[in-house]
Image 1 (cartoon, helix red, strand yellow):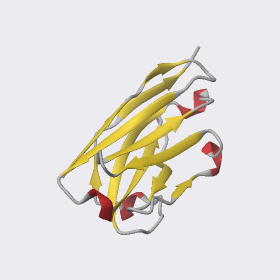
Image 2 (cartoon, rainbow, N blue to C red):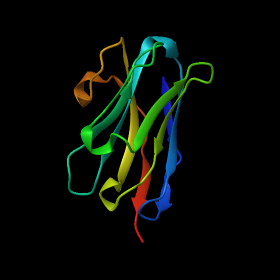
Image 3 (cartoon, rainbow, N blue to C red):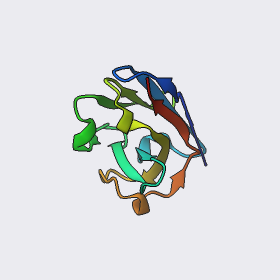
Image 4 (tube, rainbow, N blue to C red):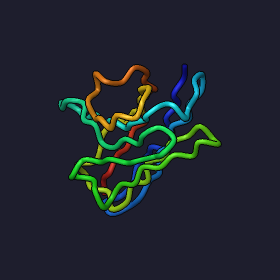
Length: 123
């Protein structure tokens, strides 16, 4: 099982980035995928998740209206479109997977994790 996150980088406040999480090694349609982030000195925080095949999204309040999670089941990939980025969005972003349709952002509910990708929002 592999989850490969990519797309991070340095962006100015107000800018946009799209993160990708490419998944292999299991039946993608059966799994809920989530994005988590961890800033220096802070605990890991769940950001957004999207359920198996029907693709119901859920995001935390601080990113609603700015971040959009989506999935392409044909490409086994989940995307996190991040707009209107703020300095407080700076963190290492990781994707994780769990079997089933529970919409949860509790890290302990996820079985497989990918490596992180750094997002830095700074002028």
